[in-house]
Length: 225
Ligand code: 5RP
Image (tube, rainbow, N blue to C red; front, side, top):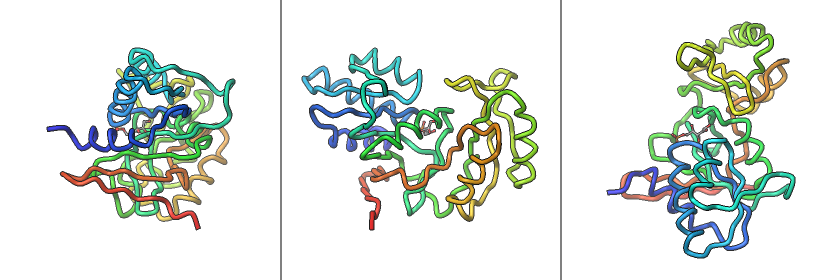
């Protein structure tokens, strides 16, 4: 039996069409999409991909997906990526896999951003999952202090006892807000702190959520009034 992650990823791949520039997400759910796209490419589909992390780049290359970067295009037709939490407005927390910065740039350049999740990722209110904040290494302690003042209960992400370093050479501070009352406001507020490069709140970027819940596939489109 295939997992919910794989089923949501494969459902999303049905939106990938010949000639498209496709943003390739990061994480264990997005990995299924990259592998499926690789299979489609080997069967004749012609697309070009833009990966959201070094790990995804390596995987996409091993799958034989032709890759480009933003020196060749300003726009992406469709991106398929995962999320750590998503709410009913399709706002999200991302960055559990530390790729939030490239993921947000890719999402912001995408005409369509399909987010693939299993049922457990859908929440009533964002914030139970620690919100990743990407900070430059210089003066990270000052940023940390400010995140503490915001009741963010910050925690420097470590790997083998050392600060975990992102693809862009930055650190991640995970903030335990627990309940985020106003995600739009918090996203802007965090990004105004000097030293913060980006944070994992993705607001109004997801255009379509594809959620596999048990046997069901639930598709929700963003209301673009
Ligand atoms: C990486 C991400 C991932 O999309 C997110 O962490 C979900 O990962 P997974 O599919 O492994 O649960 O934002 O930065």
